[in-house]
Length: 217
Image (cartoon, rainbow, N blue to C red; front, side, top):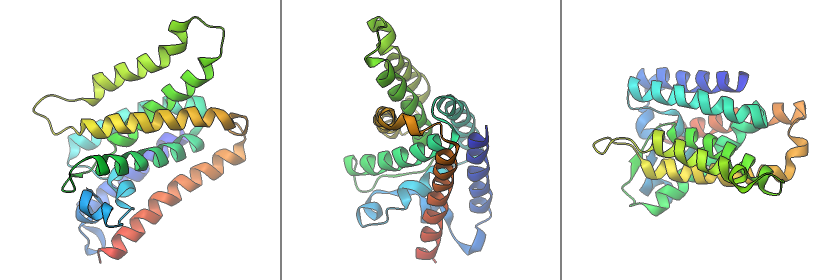
């Protein structure tokens, strides 16, 4: 639960600071995904955008789904490793999505991270079962389940502003990350590894925001 608690605290603090325009900064302009600026080298936007929201419903939705999928991933990989993997996978997804779309693309929200967490679970469990003696429906079950949840929760209504592409790429990046983590799983249960990974996840987000606010002074 402390991993999910950290997620809730961080996005809540950023929401308050952004809403108050803390330090006389426009946090949305400084931190959102902006295709042209990311291509120009403003890498931190792939991370800072994950902590921004367009309003209370958007914030509450990402808070709820992030907590649920975060708990799912944390039960498999531990809280520290889970959230470091989510930060890396979702930042990568934002970058890839930016490259695939027009340079004028702009977005904010933690939903890319939410679906990276879902993909993380699906990829790890699928890879762990791949060479098991279970019947094939059980081996592909994690993929089917992950895709079903992605389709149900991540596509939105036709008239919504849901960034379906970011959700899909987030899921794929999380899935790949989950499969790779099976290669080093013997280190994952180590409490020191969990603490280091969790600290690194928080440090990455803080460093990205410090960089963003300094550049947009």
